[in-house]
Length: 399
Image (tube, rainbow, N blue to C red; front, side, top):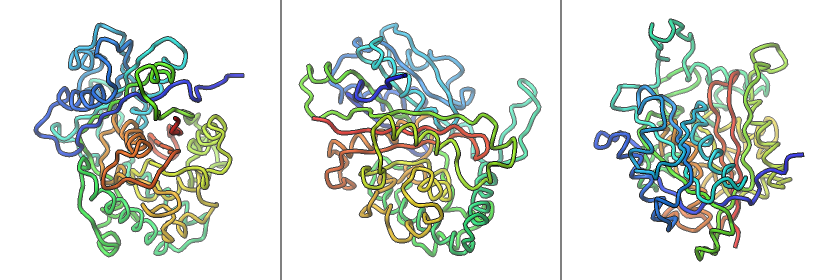
């Protein structure tokens, strides 16, 4: 039986560029901004890095198809660099590579960096772009808002909730993220909104309104990982350890037959079950101090609360409206503003989530700092509900 990677790797340093419409910076500058913070935080030299994993989704729009841009931009010491991509879980995929390398003993110090540079090329996220004749002529007939709007409709059909009541819960999700994002100087959107604004916003894909959808951002985030023993030899006392890092990928069942009703994320449930087993978590609602989840749309965050076992089936809208996931609630969610307000540069998002957990566990989150958290979770959902990649990671503070 595989023994997993629990407590075999710790985060030595992290960094994150400011997210947003970064007209002032190219891909290389964004990578360097995140890396500089991470290497300074880690307290090691660049030449001590043994290998790196570079996550970027839209290669042709950002940097090209190879790993060379990362190695050149950071002047890495001619070490192995692998470019990875796994839809919106790309940043988590980069972290997985670095963590597995350290946990296996193949590396002492490994780097994971995720980046996306989308604003300069005009990418708006809607509608779905075609690849053109160079690659193929297939143009998907869906958009991301359209696909996730169907998730909302299916959830309402399964639970019997009135759509107006579901929309109120979705509006609360968005309101909460804006409240939190206003406290985050690195967030793309730092403006509070009212529930009325969220409820009365223009419709994008019913029942999703403008404030139910995350935007498009430029940004980068970076992690340097090592073993607990090496971290302590460098004088570190408080360590953020990786307790679990699990990935589940659709095998086609959701789109292949009617066993899936379209109202939940199957891959999230599978990845969460594996992560909880690896991290020895039996009651996530009681044991997790904060979470960062993939709120590409407000309905996604809402249904993920049930998929992660934080709400009973059909109870997520009530829990959301009761403030369970607010900053001062039972399980604070998106304390940094989430994808909705921190931003969603696709290749960086998974690492940005880990960055917030890392800061919170070490008590370094500034105005948004929670009271003494010790265990946090991140969740990515890549693709669309019936063809998805889900990543669930658990991080814990050790002394």
